Length: 335
Image 1 (cartoon, one colour):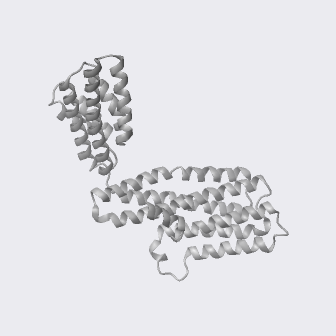
Image 2: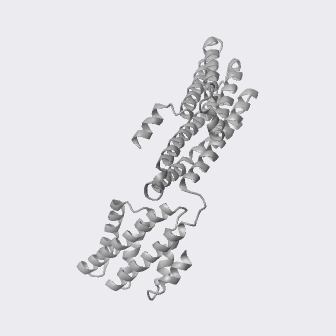
């Protein structure tokens, strides 16, 4: 993309190829939709930056005031126009490049033409940059982080059953936090999927809404997994998991792991089933609750509180996987 932009941009004149190649390299993204958005931002940023520079120098002449006002107004306009990170940086850069060699309308026009060429080449090349669509990439990311969460739940189940140490609990918590840190990337991917169906593949809007709902369910699940990991870590620092409820808690965590895995790998088998993995998950949490309540006199209060906290988190996971969570539905309606 950069080499092609350089080749075409050289037809403009001195340094046209260099400018076009730089813009093309900065603009191209993983998907056509994202490259198109970034390319438009680059072009608008160039036009605005050139205009601000020309007006500033015409009014105040080349000097401190012109440079200061140019940078200030470029920063304000880039925020107001929501041009994106790279395009926002491009605004004052373009303006200063134009001011640097001296005021020249031809310099501004030359820069604008080279920017347009670089952005257009990047948009064309981005169509071939990835073999899958934004929707497919979203599902791939969802499946990846979802299965990692299921694996972590399975490990916590085994640890609770056999007795775990504070170091092991700390490792679980670190992994759970790492999974939650992938959520901004997931939200960005969802934005790409929706934009893709809004402007390019209009017929796949329903699929984009479906993957958006699925992403919210996985996001809620990962957050609850992090809370469970934190609860188990706090328990390891204090009195630990109640021995009398250790088996039931391990079963509940294992059921959560299986429900999440099945939700990702075999979603079609769940539809219409009389007994789903989330039903088994709710049965397991009910058994854990009954054990804690029935033996409350034999268990420390802190252990009961932490055990019921795990119950609450697992029930939220079940509601999220079944798309029954009110918070989940409210976010979809407000999206």
